Amino acid sequence: MRYRSATSRGWSPEGNAGKVRGDSTEGDSMPEPTDPALMSAETLLGLYARRQLSPVEALKAVLERVARFNPWVNAFAVMNPKALAAAGESEARWMAGRPMGLLDGVPSTVKDLLNLAGFPTRRGSKTTDSTPATEDAPAVLGLKQAGAVILGKTTTTEFGWKSPGDCPLHGITRNPWNRERTVGGSSSGAGAAGAACFGPLHIGTDAGGSVRIPAAFCGLVGLKPSFGRIPQWPLGAFANVACAGPMTRTVRDNALMFSAMARHDLRDPFCLPDEKRDWRDGIEDGVQGLRVGVVTRLGFEPPLDADGRAALEGAARMLEEQGAIVEEADPMFPDTRAIFGRVWGVALARLVQTMPADKRALLDAGLDEVARLEGGMSAVDFLGAEAMRIEAAHAAARFHQKYDLMLTACTPTAAFAADQPTLHPVQALWRDWAPWTFAFNLTRQPAISVPIGIDEHGMPRAVQLAAALYRDDLVFRAARALEVAAEIPLAQPE
Image (tube, rainbow, N blue to C red; front, side):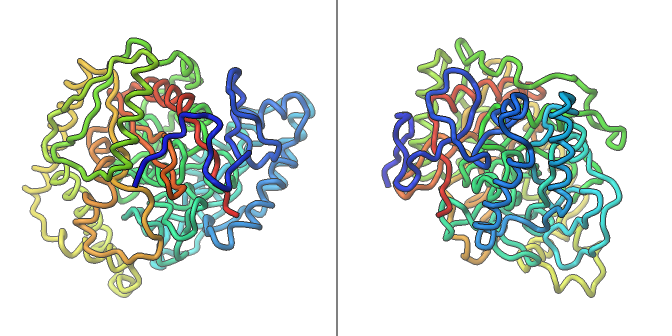
């Protein structure tokens, strides 16, 4: 299969002509969409400010797409019946010249692993109950305080345990680029909603790649931020390696959304203090003079197909052409498979063991299989895995003494079949699902998935950029440089 880069800005795959990404930044050579549903958050906000579009009109355009495409995309766990009223309140604020925050009136979604007050948190599982949450998760509260209009909650794999985009409670979520392909997971619905233009902003969560994998499969930008930037509450199964993160169609929207989400919250005693910054600041500074290490080993050799290698090589050239100093490098990680496999397995075993016995039969069979295989791990083995995790974090820190950024593949292949069964999940984790992503959950450093091109089957491919812990600004800068060089069109679900 021959990789086809989208570096020629006029090129788009058959069926996508004229469907491009909205971006209000000056100098963008691609034309602006006229359908509000296809616009970026920045574009919507600019139109609201000039009173050329209202939040109600934008939401109605998004809801029209949801009505057309969600019956087969299956991105939503539940819709918010009060969204239109919230858009009306936003419209009144804009008309009075008093928007309440950075995101006032922008349609957004929340992954169903996070609490949204007034709605149940089902986590994709038949084992959970339908009692509504009484408080918002910190990331959700950040969006609400910035004025975002919450469209609904998006689907997730059961308890976020795997990468294929299905769960026992809601079935299969399908990829808007090709309904026969998976969206990835565990932020399945967020990836699908972003690609289908069901709003520009989507909250995912990432414990081993669950933001970055669906972003890569769906042609989105997906950030796993530095651990502690976005508070966590209540804690999920993978709390010691998990983060909430923004999933968007543009890098600037990602940074904008992150600005609202990355706010201190007393419910999480381990979150970082507020920086009170707009993370778009400096995002256009480029990569001139930055040192970039192209990495193909993460303590083992993750699999990568020919298209993935071509995407990685193309991204390296794009950065080099913009002035970055690019060379192959090895962070000298320990075998990250051994570390993450233990963290993942113990978390799932604990989840199953704390569940009432009569509900275990309702679980995804693969989740139960991993829990049984890993449930007998000794405390010594688990503590050994934690020591190796810290060793990997130290190796990353040493790597970033020399290199500003790490450039890697993001997924081994393009999105695979949506209907294929989950077999041998322990092997699939590091072979098919997350071999390129889980290392950065262990090291807790920021990592971002950036779409880089379209393969000959019309499916997006992506690369991943990582920076030193707390240098989220650098991954945004480099991601923006790649986005400008390799613009790709929107999916067209028709």
